[in-house]
Image (cartoon, rainbow, N blue to C red; front, side, top):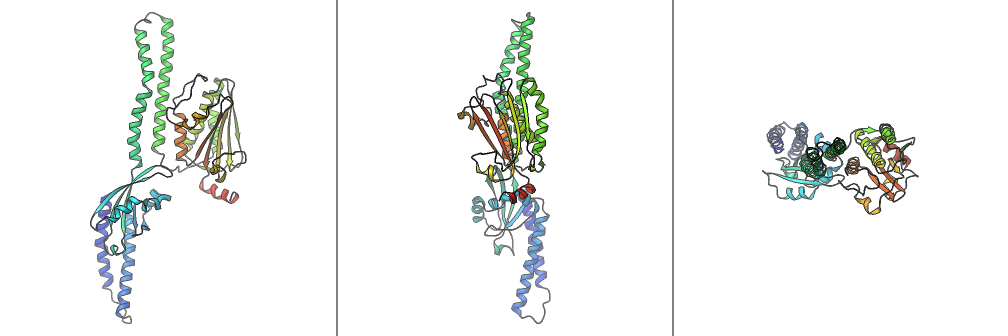
Length: 406
């Protein structure tokens, strides 16, 4: 990254110097006095130098911004705009960048790390360099940016995957080893015991497969969590598709799944596969922890909505959609609700007879975070639970809705 600025600085210094000399040597009109002539010459040279600097910055592949001594942006190339987006001010006025600039000498380059925690955690590396004349007098700085978020997320993902897999796979692996030893020994000549143990072993192997699939899914979600979704989706159509795919599962568990899709839904800015995964995970959870004969209700409606009353004011103020999954299962005690989205956190499963990986709601949380959405959980023991997801409307629909909901 520093090489990009060294190349830019060298080109800027050489070409700008030649440009200034050329401009100052141009013949001036005789009618102008000496002071006016010098003013026109200098002003024209500086204007051309600024245009030249902009062309050089725009031609570079690295994200580059030029800021003045007040850290206002003088120029930034398209790559920098795409990287920073709405966070440009927060990055280029960050205290760490200001502190580094205060001690930066004319011929040096320094690197700093800039942490950003809103709206999602990101880590940027910034390389700073003072620009040569004629920009030095204005205190212009070149800032080369490098988004380190994905690299750091990869490192964390590898470490988390190894730690989580080794911890969670230990129990089913131990069970498999125990049954294998039994089949080799005491049950070697007992066909009935062999069949029973093989069925248990198959269940443990399936559990391990689901766990690995969920760990991989969580890792992929965390890897892209800092990137805003680029597509748009119809949440109602997604809900219908996922419900159709899961109806056979509800039928095997003797449960009923109903669907209520409201009209007039705005489009949402979304990764369609991930939002489908959110709906699927919430429906699977509702089915998994509800008894036979239970009724699960999936609804999608536009927000703001009079039928959705929640404590979080954002839900009633901003246009979007609310996806709700409600069940009449055993419910969840209040002390468990804040921790439900933690990885591997499980409520007592004895009432359901089915075990989960403890990763489904963690995946939901990270996907919703990437989509700048909200998750609310309401539950009363003995009465059931409601999981609600609010997703913001896509830009075009949000603009139209803001006229309706000032």
